Image (cartoon, rainbow, N blue to C red):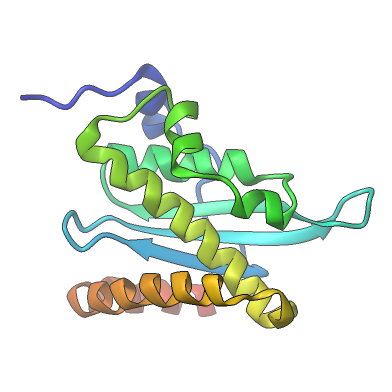
Length: 169
């Protein structure tokens, strides 16, 4: 049985928005899935809006994965760009799925990966700039994502080393 994607998912797979890296990113987050092997990285640049609130001024992604992984990575960047960090943290997998006009049930996990990668990028930014804003719930979520990341790193060691080397250049 073939997987059926919405037109929006296919369009974003073919022409993803906000693809790439941000040099000297203010925050970088990565999330992956052991079962399917998808890995997403999100990079953020933080600035201030007119109210002097911290917002996601720029955001980009890189994804090693399937059609749904690329489309969800693209749409999470579109949803988060220009939002305050708190607003971005409140983007849910349901927001991602609805904006994409649906995902096949077997691909729902990609929407969670995209929100996890965004969370990790903001967590990374908070760690360096506002550690006082990190609460116990955020720490638990971060540790859960990190445990999966460590398992993925064991499987994809060469690819991850290459990505880290590129970030240093």
